Length: 254
Length: 318
Ligand SMILES: Nc1ncnc2c1ncn2[C@@H]1O[C@H](COP(=O)(O)OP(=O)(O)OP(=O)(O)O)[C@@H](O)[C@H]1O
Ligand SMILES: [Mg+2]
Image 1 (cartoon, rainbow over the protein chains, first blue to last red):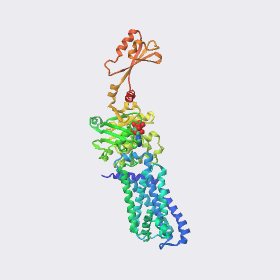
Image 2 (image 1 turned 90 degrees about the vertical axis):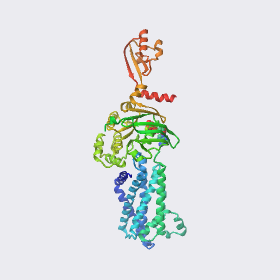
Image 3 (image 1 turned 30 degrees about the horizontal axis):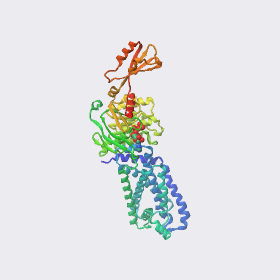
Image 4 (image 1 turned 180 degrees about the horizontal axis):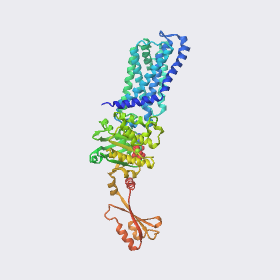
């Protein structure tokens, strides 16, 4: 027996929370995307013309989407579970007939929904500046969804782990943002000197961005099979962490 | 649903050998046995840190027990947690609510969380009963503390539970609201809801509870019906208004160990109602013999508070 109504209640609650900041959530990605295009696309891109056979303006679109989705997913999902912990309202979830898995489904589902919406908004905004053709639309959609869910799971883990607002911010800021920036969001790995190219291959984000870009242009830094493997592997690792956390009541129950 | 009739011997909650040692190594519960009867109001009394909140937390699922079992209407609260939890509503000690939610969406959320289908009529009645209906559209952060507490009660009742846990429902609540709260608790009991509450106000337990359990340092010290507890452990005080004030207790009365009050105008004698000889007739006789006259006399039953203080201190001394 699944508590579907319970999942739906949390999902709705979370979506309503996003809804309260609807315009900021909606306008922010439009503005940042436009700024990126003005700076990178026009100022720099006009001197770069093509990367891996793709016009630079279009080339940065997948990276831009990933960058926003990583940060949005992590911050929304971590905040979503951290708030009840911090304010004490988590008592209700712990005392309700809802399982950990159902709770995660609701929180991660809501956060991922928001990330996907933002991803689509960025794509639409980018389309105002450049023509973006998507070579493999179905795969692109699957990538988008799986990556959104994966990073929301990651965010959820951070939210459960964090004991302070500072800890909540530290991983996105110190780990995810730099890794994404250095992960080929705005350039192709082949453009780097050989040593850096090797070092960069240790950055897991490279595989995600490369795979996502492949679904757009059919070219990537690494073969798409490896990217798919990386996405699924990342997903599996997070699921494992979450199951371990809940089995042990980690940091939620005393 | 005649509550009175259902209230029988069968426990709706059965707690056996419950222990809890917190991560820091502190043992908050040392083997608690307690049953709660269907339809009753049980008051859990105990000083700060006695383990009341811990006990409630374990039954409700917010705290993991270290050992022991809890059956909620026959369902093991860990193995059959869904069945157990769906019967229970919890109002925790701390006021914690989602500040930006409206009252209405908060109670709707709680009902959904417990897996119950949407029922606006039920929720409307609930909010009316708690005089929150006018505030249904208000954000919770706009409400006063007492109203917030009522919202928490509404949330706890939104899924129509059979058992309600109220952890200090009247802490920091004014006299009027406390009266309202008592009335509400009585109403719920009349509807057949079993209620377990904790409080530091003894008068509250005396007023509301069918039974009282006293917990101290993680152990249940006594569980009994409120009235019989008072009868058994109750002490009475005899107050005599003297015709002539005394400066000190006459040596002839020393064996009763009375004390003087009100500047020597009153002689007070405490006696045990359980004792075979209360000592009252002999005291009065002796007073007549030595010529200490009195205009008036009265006796007072000691309150649950006296009993409680007595109990807690007795154990401390032991
Ligand atoms: N999370 C925790 N970690 C460690 N110790 C705890 C924790 N929660 C409670 N305790 C300890 O367990 C004991 C019992 O606490 P509990 O909250 O159950 O008491 P209480 O009877 O509800 O007290 P009060 O009347 O103050 O609410 C206390 O000594 C408390 O310090
Ligand atoms: Mg307490």
